[in-house]
Amino acid sequence: MKAYQTNEIKNIAILGGAKSGKTTLVESMLFEGGLIKRRGSVDDKNTASDYRDIELERQNSIFSTVLYTLYQNSKINIIDTPGFDDFVGEVVSTLKVVDTAVVVINAQNGVEVGTEITWRHANKNNTPVIFAINHLEHENSNFDETIAQMKSSFGGGITVVQYPVNAGLGFNSFIDLIKMKMYKYADDGGKAEILDIPDDEKAKAEEMQAAMIEDLAASDEALMEIFFENGTLSEDEMRSGLKTGLNTRGFFPVMCINAKHDMGVDRLLEFIVKNAPSPDEMPAITTKGGKELSCKTSDPATAFVFKTTIESHLGEVIFLKLYGGEITEGMDMNNANTSTKERISQIFAFCGKNREKLDKVYAGDIFATIKLKNTHTSNTLNSLKGGDDEIEAIEFPNPKFRTAIKAQNQADDEKLGVALNEMHKSDPTIIAGFSKELRQLIVEGQGELHLNIMKWHLENQYNISIEFHTPKIPYRETITRVSQANFLHKKQSGGSGQFGEVYMLIEPYSEDAPEPKKFKLKQ
Image (tube, rainbow, N blue to C red; front, side, top):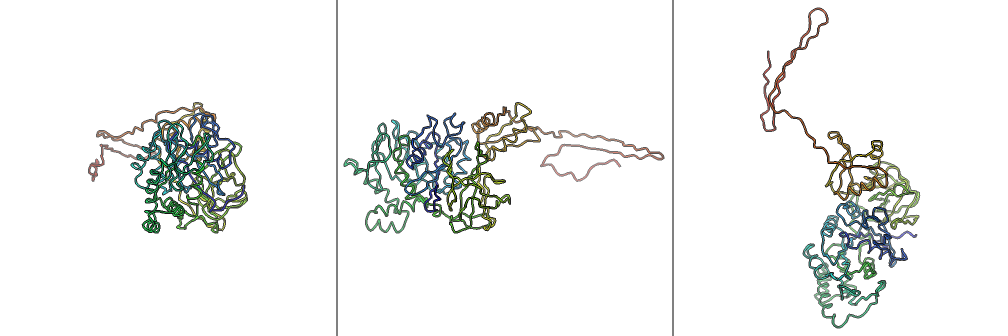
């Protein structure tokens, strides 16, 4: 696989609530880019994203999965994320390194709790957002109601750039307001037939395009002047406004898809290639030392670890984003966090469980490596000539749920500690530690589901049978009443003896009580 230049790279996250169709969308993206020859499905347990045993068993994404597709001479790095809030750590780490978020919404359910959670995290990271309305082929889908909910929940900036012609059973067409054409798909999706807008849709299309153009013009003073002068914008001017508005988060385009049948995915990919920011078009990030990194290949190499996994036959796999320079196979780098010298012995582009070997990567790309000695999630690697720049660590959420954990077989206690440490490397939102006060091993996570998944891994991957227990209550002793005592200590070693008398007075003391100034001692 060739190394792609910075301006040929797009880094996107696929976000959204559970069952919105994220993993299915990724399948169609890979299919359209030629990375897979046949689209898998969650029901058939053969998708590129959900390949781990626990995901196949539960038919849900549990971990973020790094993939890529190729489209119109661009490499689109894709990170598919879980929809349940228990696995929010995967979303947080993903948003640290991507440049655009595609938020998938189920048109049957509209804006859900999971949608709002991912939106908040995208906002916190100042990430440009494209909305993809999915499941438009279902009888209960409601595009207009979904848009109304989005505007109510997310405020201004929601900009419809496509709307469905025949949402519901039999959906296969939408109007594209940028090209002012109708996209019509065969039953099995794929490449659309691009047609003129039917006469009975022209008035609605023109009205909605006018609203879109106003939103675009409002994001750019130069476009606003053209709009006032001409009353409209050309397709190139609209595209300029789209790119500017998307990159600056002035508005958030809404597109139509049927991910299961690969409808609208070709147009979504084209939109990403033409409008989503490349890494060097994003604002520079500032290191702890105050240095700005803007994904320039001419800069010294600086890479950030955003994910660690344990893969069979490979061991620890480290996923990084390169924020400057280039990295070649066999290159030595310094870990700014651990002061460890590391050698990048191999470079991979991962697509689910499959990997492609690379000779080098350029600034802005996402890649993986193995066999590092002392490098972990949130660490920064610098070229030997690049200094010790350290990128701010990922801010993972605090635990929300805790329980005591115990191996059923005492002989597995040490093995359990090692396993929990490995799991923390892969998922830093799992926190385990021994409480000296309670004399229990306590594990913390994002919820009951999160810890149940952890239990599954311990029992199925590490072969450790464990039990959860309610943590003990840390009862503490205190003084409740006044008490006094005295003691006479004698030491006789021939001749005159030695004596010591001790008088003790104990009484309750509270934080608001006056501090004792004097003690009554027997003279």
